[in-house]
Image (tube, rainbow, N blue to C red; front, side, top):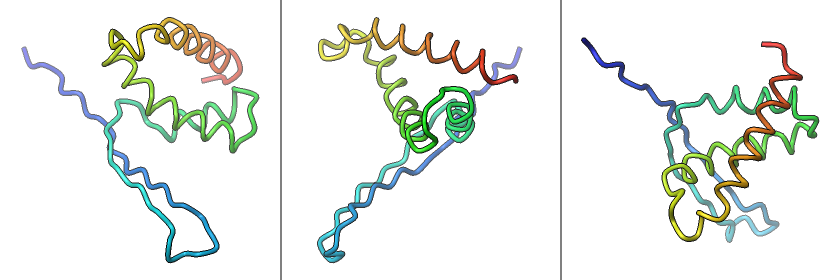
Length: 103
């Protein structure tokens, strides 16, 4: 039997400092892979979270960056106390969005 290969989506995140002095502006850039379609996650949050579109975008991206880190490091001393709260928050968020957005 053939095993299914999981195909992750790959993204490049770029953060640019916006300042009047463009010569001193800093840039941070990295790539990451995610099993979820980040654009779809953001769109669903915009539709079903009740948050402003700009805030929903920030929350969606932040959660897709933080979520996998939380899962991979759930027993790490810095994250273990936060993990139950994060899990509860994610369940609440998903149920709220799912109830609002008709799939």
